[in-house]
Image (cartoon, rainbow, N blue to C red; front, side):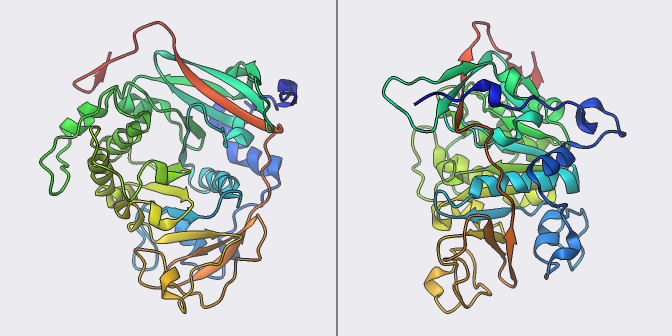
Length: 382
């Protein structure tokens, strides 16, 4: 199979308000909306104010009628139901409505579902590593390695961070689409944990972050850093396949995976209070750890399978006492339709197709650049 042609990729888009710091220009969100034919987000178009408006229109003081802070949502659906494109649409809404710093959790060597937004993507890479990228065909053949491309020719910016503190306080930008690759060296994570007064309930083990940890453990340290050290501004954390990060049945292995999941899970309420909206997605709600799942009241059920129903109590998601739906509304729906609901209200939502610019995938790898990366001592990057 012929590898995708790099010439078919759109050029990075730099004439925006956020990139040029010029209020006369259109925003990143405006560019994405026009490029993909997305409607402006209309707060008045919803039947229920406690659904879409309450989820996306963030406020620090919600009073009795609204959720204060960043509530977030857990999306559940089978593979191929459109979860990734829905997450992209959510990212654009957060950028437009709240000027939120969108943090898209990227995975090295995996599919880059963020590729449609590459023209405005700010790709954040740990210092001491150089990203290499390959375009690979959708249909693979033996020996096919794809075409190597320069990531800086595909995205708007490739930027480097020294540790979790440096990423949060200096590198991430408001109103922009930040694609973050975790640091295999876990720089800053241990310092943040040791400076925190948070302890895992009913545990005598000390959490430790080292370069021997699975690389996705970095997200536990990053999340704790954001809650503990800020900045406390609107931030939208988008984590697809979240069950691979925080599974319900995680083992307490030599990396203390279960304790780290619990440590951050016990901080989930502080995420909301500090304006950090969590948009998690997975295949089944029961696969996500309860401390992460049960603190999210908004849910999205994707097309192609029966939605939870009050008449079938066994279908009600774990962690919810009830659902307002009585009938199967989603089994026959096509991609581009989902059901947003809480324990009291539900409403169907739709979004346009957000296609990749190529028929294939972009795979990004982090290679050590041969120089010693920055280290963190006492919270100061060197």
